[in-house]
Image (cartoon, rainbow, N blue to C red; front, side, top):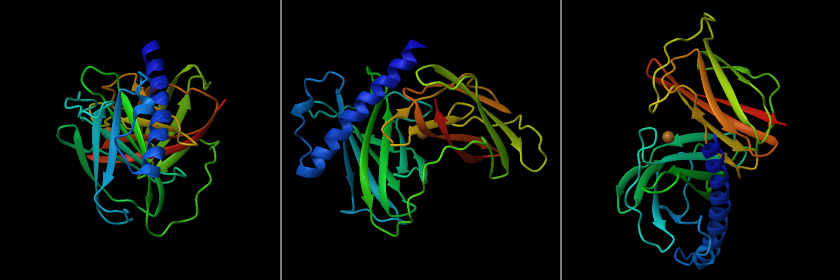
Length: 271
Ligand SMILES: [Cu+2]
């Protein structure tokens, strides 16, 4: 319980730190000047983000390289498997309307590579989630501007009805008690949208009943969640998390049924 809370706090600290670094790199184009953070013991890893293209464009495959280093610029070479992958990469537009969950491939010497394919132009936040051997879970983030046609930003409005149909599934999200700073258990209840029958045979997706990613509306807070029962098969999928502050958050639940992954987004207000 306490460990979960610490992870969330650590993720914050790292996110804030990474943003500062990214801004710094953006201005100076120098990936090696990080002395400003060496005194901060939490900033014990850093990520260097590079697209093969000078300016990535939407609707085409763009190669992204992410190098994970310690704070001296030495590659970190060993990573723990976490939900069957060495790195999870969340790609989200600034208005949170477009979301992708990718798995960069580990090459060697701390270097991960992935093909991105942005669904539109605009600003995107990239969030890499990984666990170096002998470290706590880490989060590193990066903003990128993508060239291409950009639809008007969508408002991030909390939904009052937390039931929706996505790809033939009717999904209802409930919370035991929704309160910032408290451990919250959420339940995703999944029915077949046509027959209204509860789905009892969800497949394991990345070693669990599903995955839930949560971001605050300003994208600053990336929350980790843990399935209460990893091997559950539905119709209930329960996860625990702690919302660190009151405000608007977007959640994406990812589940697998009949070999297909479906992603269900909800926007909520946390008191
Ligand atoms: Cu993942």
